[in-house]
Length: 102
Ligand code: FES
Image (cartoon, rainbow, N blue to C red; front, side, top):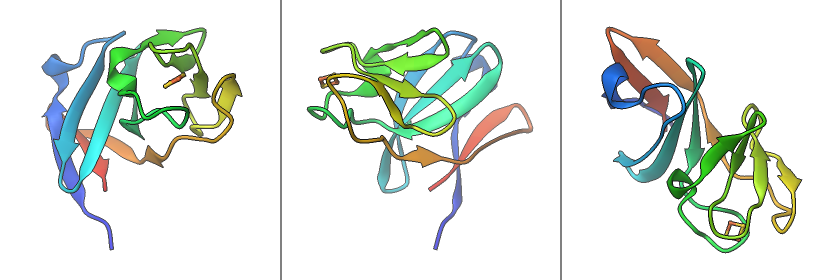
């Protein structure tokens, strides 16, 4: 069963920002890509580095440790050294806050 959990205020995650946080049981990385929000498990599928330390690059989420990239929509690995996807979560913006379904 899943729950919608308030992740952060909209103002805490301006465009271009990645924010790591605990959401219920899950470690989440919330990404604001030009006003569209995404949420991922905050753990690179290569060597578990926090994705919230990374950056948005060419429409992908780039891990800061070895440069693997993940599709923002699907979490699919699109650049080595990662080959496995990262888990994604549904995101909703309402009442000035970002909610994640965990
Ligand atoms: S830990 Fe992310 S690319 Fe290696």
